[in-house]
Image (cartoon, rainbow, N blue to C red; front, side, top):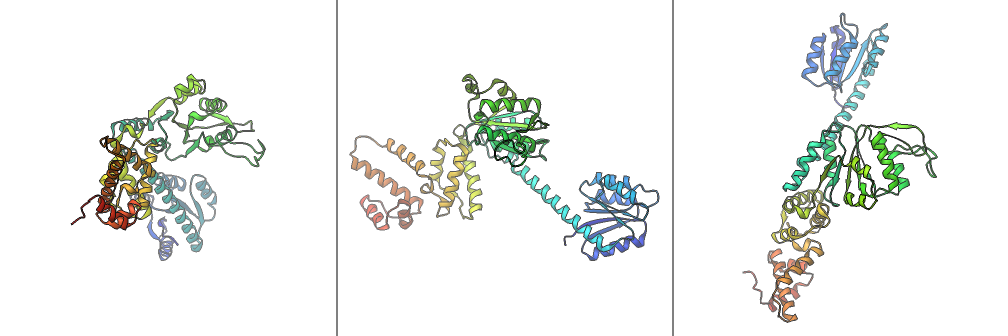
Length: 457
């Protein structure tokens, strides 16, 4: 049984104390009062799960008392206690928002079961509230890792538009964080309590996408065994995030335009018009102006979507964000994988800073996750990074060496540099350095002697 905080209002001291003592023995936290004034004062001061009120107190309007109590604490369950002959009043109170009623004399076992159900209900409400608060915290604009001015400008624009009902078009390359910004806009909007529904417009063919967006009736097409609610309908009162909007076919563009303009649609195979209140956030990595010029994207839909346009810059144009993102992802994945990793070595960080990131933040995140998983020591080393990063770095180093030497001389120089780097990353422990280089320790000792590399004292 879960403990509940219970307030009892009854002007009959004997009845009130009987209930108080019983619920206290059951493990609940109980407060008893005899007047409306005391009850209202208590509800204003403390948070109760349940409020038991007698509807037969002289001069007290049970309906009004129940309503006032729930205005102060909307989640509190009100239970009406009623004597024979006033059941009608109790039923009216329930219609006005009361949770239940109990006839007098109170059956204490029945009351205990009722309080237990209320306690479970209140815990679910609290868990739901905490979950929503965690989502808000997770998707706060300040939680989006950024130090660059370009990204801060984009986030400031998103913050200013969040409280409006305007349609937002997020533009930027794949992996820049458009979906993260869309979630932050939703959870900072007046619609935060309502659903955020996502649709990837490139993931489905036109016929299936129409059903996904607008739903379908039973028998609308082969395999439609039952009615299905579409994403527009599911997002009613909330936000619909249309990702990769530039991939829509001309036919779907026309149908989407009508739904946005009229705020209504029909399910596939149906004739009932369904009205919805949905705020749309769209995202694309395509050049929509070019697509319009090529006749592949409707101008009227473009202007309907492009009420507020926010450009999310690629990571290569905001390299000052890379160090903070590296540290953020290292912390995230070392906790997920329970690895004792303190950070990234200077050499590996230097490689990460010079890389162009064609896959943007998503690629950087994947690189760090991989490195955390593979790292053997307390620091992520260059050898823990993907081969294409190390190869690109090696090519850059080769171009820096002076031309004119023989092939053998050049190879020796490269080999000596790689050995020195591996020894440094391994703290001059030859066994670890050999593992990083993919050779045996015996071969490493030979090459150290060959290249006259001094052993650490």
